[in-house]
Length: 302
Image (cartoon, rainbow, N blue to C red; front, side, top):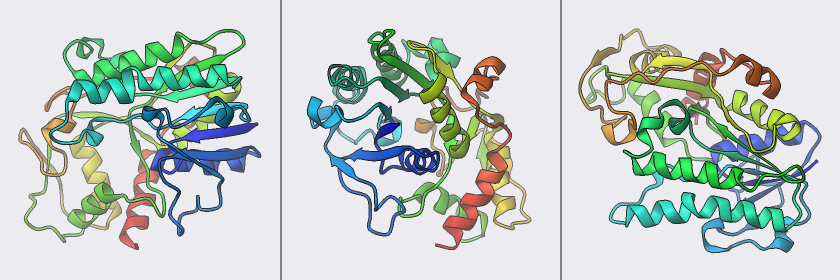
């Protein structure tokens, strides 16, 4: 299969590119800038463009059998001082379906869009939160273009655990430094609440499964392990070799601010992905701790 990864120089897109290539596919990247020279992605063909600004043409996409769309912006990418409604319109509500429509006109056979889990797990957030609403509308708009001849599916994953050499992993580098005692100004606590976590390896397996077996027009809620934020932070401390214990406090945390906790501090967002869908997509479970160990080892030695 000849596959284009949109957002291919990011952490998730980069892992997907390497994984899909390991499965014998021809893989190219699409991004706003080329991969870093020291990145394992440096040898991939790369289309330079911005999907939010008509940066790609039908001719660009026509050679590909399938596209993995891994470029959707989330709340961490919202610039300060910008019109939030306009940002979400451009990057999600209209940007994603418009790109999928371009792929259809180009004759691409399959599109797997990577979305987000909030609107499937907690639909009450759709009218309450601009970001969740944008993800919901991007998902709905993309899948509305599906047909028997144009297979479109969405994978809606939770918080993804992973890092890639050559791609900045500031969040995990900071968390690891804190766990190793290098940030004594930050108390050893986590905010109240929690969520579902999934390794980037499991996500890549789900992507490959969707490219082969996804039902056209379907949204798949995927995920792995439900953890409190305290338990997840403790995993990082343990992986870093710390003997300290993380406690839970109902307080804002400097490394996980309230603005990034979409359902609200104190909420533990839990769910179990459908077993039949998990089997169809073929991704492993119980992979979060391994992923944390891998990341801490990687960023700690960098």
